[in-house]
Length: 304
Ligand SMILES: [Zn+2]
Image (cartoon, rainbow, N blue to C red; front, side, top):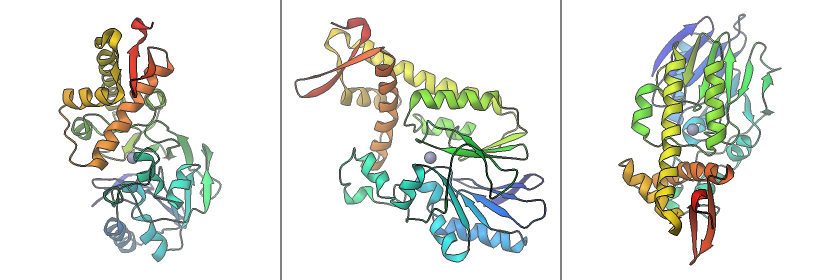
């Protein structure tokens, strides 16, 4: 993992999942922002910090996805770190089986759902945070960035925003095809909030750091709006017979040429597509009816 210095006191470890690092001016306090997928990533990070004689006193986890806090257990075992996480996300980090549970729509998950990508080791959270300044680490501002996860928060420090998965880097965006979100409206609102911010640079959870962030954020907005529109079209084209929720998922996966390799991957796409369907229902562009034992979605145009 490359250790990149962005500005005075602001760094990140560049990898498949980026890990941020900030250090106070007196070098007494150092905070990691997320911990990577597993202990091997955390080990590399610790080795680098040790070789540069940089402190590690705090750990902030932006949201409760296993690829962002899977390495945190190892860090807590080896360092006395004050661990901070947003409300609700923290509940999943303390009880990580909740991720495979919610991806299984509340059921006890199949054994194959309980893998390192969906379930990280449980960690201890010392402080639950919400938007605002962090008392434990002056100058650190916590920014609410919901949509990709229920209560995701990023960190703003000396002009650099560590944005977690609120947006994806340019190359990563294409690869994901249908990016994971849990709330389409909040996700778009968060992207607009980021676009309006005046900062020196942003670091996404996946992809390169950017100074010209408005363009990449606009690309993210366009991709999500296109997905919403495509879901709306699938529903509209079903006419007055409507379309089952399961067939909306199938149509979208086919349209975007996504072939999930396993149940875990399928459940992530299903959740993302559901977010767009729920948005249509919430803004009354679509309605649902439970008929013939199926959840069927109708365009508001054909509302009986
Ligand atoms: Zn995530």
